[in-house]
Every structure is written in C-alpha cells, then in structure tokens.
Length: 209
Image 1: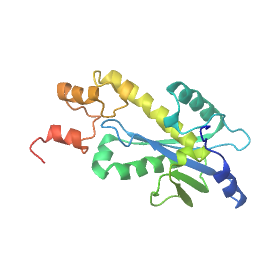
Image 2: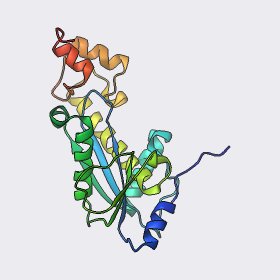
Image 3: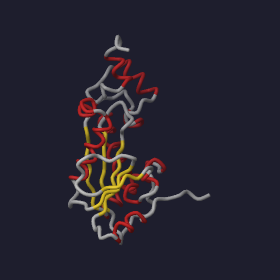
C-alpha cells in the first residue's frame, strides 16, 4: 500500500471561498527537555508546489533538508520560537501557541485563512482558522510548516550542542534519551533546560514529590 501524502485540497477549498493568503502552521519541540519550541507558518504558491512534501516525522534528515530549501525558495514563510524560560513561565501548550503567533506575525503578509495542526487553536488569531488533527499528514501547507519548524529547531539544537557539549543535542534534539538523562545527572542542568518538566524538576528539587 502506498504511503498517503498530504494534498492541496484544504487550500483549494478555501480558495473557492475567496481566500487568497492561506497559511499552514505547525510546531516542533513540545516534548524535549531542553531548547525552544519552534513554530512555522507557510503559504505555498499554488502554481509552484514543492514535490515530495510529507509529514516531517516521516522524512529522513536529508529529505527534510532538501525540502526545507525548496520551501524557503518557493513559499512565504514565518518562523517563531518560545524560549525555555517562557515555557516554564506559561506552560508548554501556551508557549507553543506563543511560538505559533510569532510565526504568523513574521509572515511577509497577513494571512486571511489559517490551517493549524492539532485539535485546538490559539486565542486572538488574526483571521479565521481551522484546526486539523494530524494535519501534517493531510494538508500540504501544514506539512511544509512541519518541515520548516523541525529543520529550524534541529539546527538550533545542533548549535546549542556546541555550546553545551555532552548532552547529545545534535542527535537527540533535546529529547529525553538515555544519553541525555545520564548527561544531566553527570553534568548538571543548563540554562537551556526546561525546569518545569518533571525530569528536570526532580533533579533540581529532589525533595518534592
């Protein structure tokens, strides 16, 4: 059975209603113990769609990098982040929404429709929006956003790996792998760690249950 790929049908349907700037939004990095959460907002050109778009999780790193370059060259893109300190201050869900709002605000022009991965929407969006569950596997604009967010965040974590060697962030992107957990125990907690996340909180406050 062939792998289902995202298509442009959601965007085409919205275009029939008069929308002209239809943007897909997705994020990367909700689960890691370190680093920012990163969101991307992408408006694809209907007449110049990148080939091979797919949910970023189903692509190899090499394929993601190649598609990242295609998308950046052909589409309108906004990128936003929320820092570990912001994640700790307002929680990961609200920080994800903050990153999404920043990505939308960073677009070269304001959207008139948004297609957002997930089952909930941020508040105070600038235009009508639709949540699409597993949208990165269904909607081309969201798939493109997932690739931009993932590659951007992976590059950030590779840079942070050079600043804080030993945690393996270039390979694990801050996720709680065995190497990462062991490194936290051996090397301690960095400013890039999310102190509100249970594994970090338990290290910093071992007496708290």
